[in-house]
Length: 564
Image 1 (cartoon, rainbow, N blue to C red):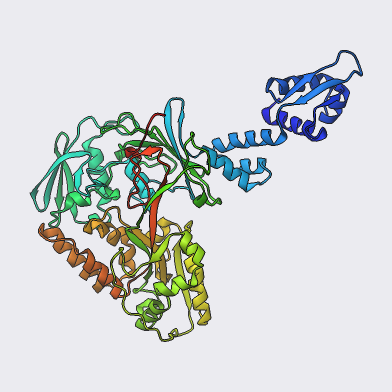
Image 2 (cartoon, one colour):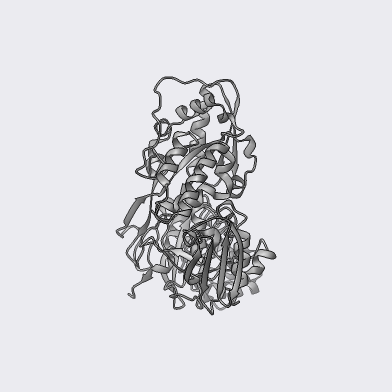
């Protein structure tokens, strides 16, 4: 008899006797359980073996036997649901709990946080959506970018604390000229599948990467000796090592690039390898053959709690009681913002009257007033007046009433599976409706939005940007990201921005013109900043070294747990 069938029989028994210890007969129980007297003995013995009941059968036909309950129906129900939760099967668990969402949240809470299982340190974290394809060459959202940095390595990387370029797969490099760079690779580096890193893997990766506008100035990549990579450029770039620290340029096995299985798990050389990525969880395991310091947390298990309010599910340790711990939250403003981007090429905003109307109607203050203030606070939003916190680039907005130039349908696109954007588009639609305009809303995936799906038909994109560090040049990848900005921006404006960047690339004495570019984008009304968000991690103190990074996560390789 299956475990679930046995639980069903217990439920019938418990319900019939209302959980009260009782004197009964074998025949009575056979009728309750709809089975033969012979099967009754087997079922009752199994329940007794599991400790659910005590069963004292009487000798002789018709004699009263004694039934004593040691478990309740709810206890078995919760035990079964707890097992389902541990397996990540949240919908069946909710069904087993008779759709009691509060009880399910409690069972989930019990299993979040830090624990030790079979001698391994495990951290379980909640997240509100599943992770997409972790292919670094595809458009990635902020959280996917963080995971990619844990799983893959590039030739270089940016130290999160010092915010300086340092070696990763390359231990040294040199500029033979402003258009010729040489990188020296670490020997004996292995991918997660056990394969040794070869120069050809680097060459294949960078050949794929140079298709992107950010890397189009790469001309050729070659290996002139073992563990040595030469990169030749079409134009000067004295900052190439900074560029190669971007997530686009992390190194993949050559065969993953040429014969990629869309269902395959990503394979990198980073401190963690992916062992599961589906709609229920993303599971990372420390890579024992990592060329650097091995991660101290063995398993990072991220549970996908779609449909549940993860704002109220806090990581907890196995030694602490829920609700009795002190949570220390260190928050910082996101290095970026949520914004509106206007299609000044093929959308309504290519007309200055429409652009003026949109920018005045959707100012950050106007949008804040429309949003539910409790939700505004819960999402930890603050008004943005520039792309980055502290930048004030928004042009003065007229307080006079503004009317649309004509009666048209406005098409607005936003990223799907996002906690903020549906709220923003709802309020934008409300404002446009008040002005007699129709609205068409497109909810797009990250890949659809950044690859330009229906770009020619979109008037306004709702999106966001976050940079990995506070370095001035940190916004560079976003400016060229999969040509998203390029498709919306007039050619002359884009050329002006591109010229500023090219000048910086050719001169090591120049600071990156981040402020000038941010001013150009906002004052030309290409980008309309809306909100910054406070980011951070809830730290119970059980994990040492937990510090939130600019992507709102913490470096999994930097945390550890003190023994109790």
